[in-house]
Length: 248
Image 1 (cartoon, helix red, strand yellow):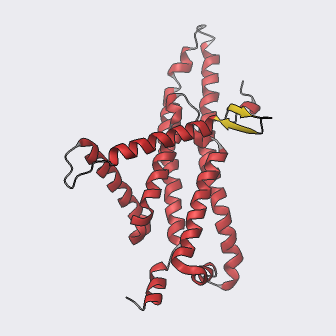
Image 2 (cartoon, one colour; image 1 turned 135 degrees about the horizontal axis):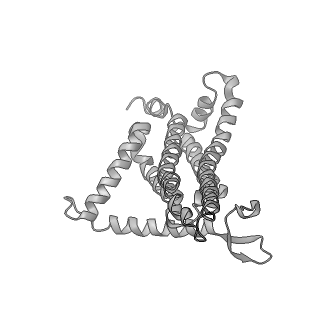
Image 3 (cartoon, helix red, strand yellow; image 1 turned 135 degrees about the vertical axis):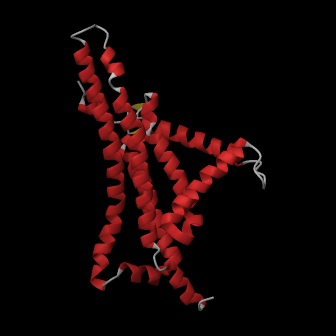
């Protein structure tokens, strides 16, 4: 049976009295980040004007798709934010698909998803002040009517919570469903053989859904919502810039 106290990420190393520790989510998160950084450096070095290697062709294809994806939601601001969007897309996708390797997905840890959503929140707020200025940001928060200011503030504050819980809930829920199904298959196998063969065979469709399809969908939703709210947060930036420069 599944024990509730074992549902969280395992502690790999504890320091001192145990209040400071390294969990498997943090460990695999750092390892994944290091791998992506090394891969990015490898694919990005020695580029030529006319691509002649498969490495550069693959790199340009991936970057081109990311920029096109960002442009659909961010318009002329896509070049500024596409690197961030591409990074979190690949990171979340791979981190949510670790179940394919028999590992716990890092996004099944609410601490990880809250960290990612907090980055999105800070990006939106800082970008709003950067492109709109303090007065422009305040004016934007008072649209369409001044009495909407408290509601707009509340909406901004609840954004990271909703993003974090949506990603965590779907990935963690999928992990629980797979675990329950495997226990069920093990129970059924006991009626036929002492070897739990059903556990290894009939779990494959669920693995395909929750470790491949579900991570893709949830990653797409997370990044798309990030761009939608970012676009909303800097709406009117071009008009604000034109007003300051006299339309130049």
